[in-house]
Amino acid sequence: MTRPTLLKMNKHISYKRKQLFVEDVVVSDITGSLRTPFYVYSRTTIKDNFNRFTSSLEGLNRIICYSVKANSNLSVLETIAKLGGGADVVSLGEYQRALRAGIDPKKIVFSGVGKQDFEIAETLKSSLLQFNIESVSELEAINKIAINLNKVAPIAFRVNPDIDAGTHENISTGKADNKFGIPISKAKEIYQHASKLDKIKIVGVDVHIGSQITNLNAFRQTFQNLEKLIYDLRACDIHLENVDIGGGLGIKYTDDDVEPDLREYSKLVKQILGNLNCKIIFEPGRYIVGNSGILVTKVLYKKKSQNKNFLITDAGMNDFSRTALYGAAHRLIPLSQESREATEIYDVVGPVCESTDTFLRNHLVENAEEGDFLAFLDVGAYGAVLSSEYNTRPLVPEIMVYKERFEVVRSRPTYEEIFEKEVIPNWE
Ligand code: LLP
Image 1 (spheres, rainbow, N blue to C red):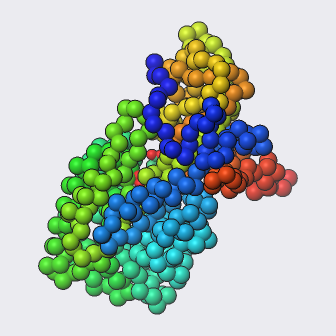
Image 2: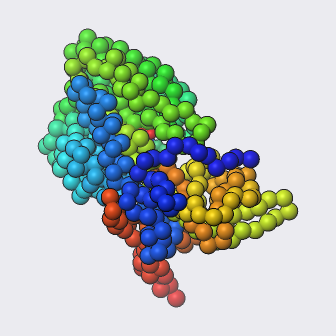
Image 3: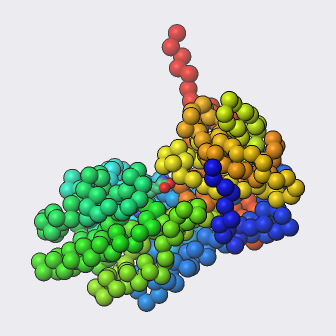
């Protein structure tokens, strides 16, 4: 059995007078005007996280390229843009989001193992900080497109250091068997080849070993490998301006998680990479937005089976899939702490027709009656972005709170809007 945890909550998502608030907005005001489930983000939390991250790196020549995939809502990106942040994007769609939100294209890195010709061409025409290249074939493709456009492509190679980040295997990216990057052992040779290509300008090196990393040793080893590579390249007259060390810093979701220490992480970066005369690029995602978001849901039904109690919520795995994908546990708390005591242990499940549509197993839920509202915590990263319309459940709305105001920053599509993209062919 797992108990509702007393773990410290983000100070901008907290109870006041027994009601859950996001900043100065009582969440029940939102449930009063919008059907659940929906996500709510605290803009101040995002700002605080970003500012804490950058100020811990004071003294370094650095740029924070927020990893757009973690939460790509335009209002989140606008918040990052206003703070002077850049972006790490993995598609033309993410690139265009970043521009639309006001992020300077010169602060955008384009990552990803499968960039397509049209994506490379469009970003090159417009401008970017660098392509993080993941294969020799991609290098050749970028060079060819650059020749056609008569542009010079700024590039870095993503190296795969064959290091175990000690995280869930589905979010580990730095082992030799993962599809990511070029083997670090081949890097020198590949850089030398790239240096001979006409329209390629080598500007950096890149690495990203995984996500939700809590043990800093994997980072230490990775940075040491990078340092060595940078010196090896210098010895053959290849000089890098940028060292992109990816994202991956974990956060604390439950009492069982170890919280990695940001100051220790920054210290490591400074110690190992701080004196190379390079700009350090960071690509944090989860650290910036993870604890900024909640998913508000309603208890639809309670039901008993032979040996279990189920609590059926109106949020499903299509709205929030981290549990189904990675077995992730997220805390669940009531919007109102009034009255009732926790009495029973539940499996908390959604309405989707899949057994993996289970958020918590054997969990003591506080104040759960049919019709009550609950909130999953720490869903600001990899929450809404991973949602789908499976079971023809419309994409879940997103709300941004800032101080005493809230705005719907992505609305729920109507059924008509969902259907209008589809066609019934007239074949008879
Ligand atoms: N840079 C690159 C190249 C990445 O692939 C990622 C995440 C990041 C930066 C940001 O990593 P972060 O700081 O957020 O850990 N859906 C999974 C996480 C997938 C991470 C994918 N790449 C989850 O919900 O845990």
